[in-house]
Length: 99
Image 1 (tube, rainbow, N blue to C red):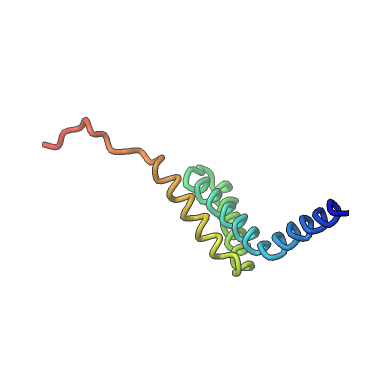
Image 2 (tube, rainbow, N blue to C red):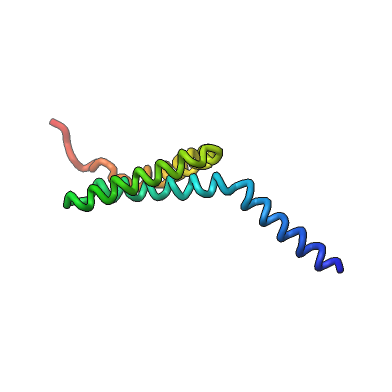
């Protein structure tokens, strides 16, 4: 009996998390989609690729805007991605001399 009650409480907790965090989850998916499409747009060569990635950026923005309650999560994820990507940038070459 105790196990059944614990199972019901765990299921209720999972459902509550999904219900309350659904806007944040969807906004995060929109942010990831937009960020990925932006990175691909920067390296796209053909016009059709640029149109496709531009549309994907628009879809990501619409997903974020339709879930405005999850914007705080998107900001946090964007900050995390920024700080993770910041360290991957090419450092300047310290062996060069400025005359």
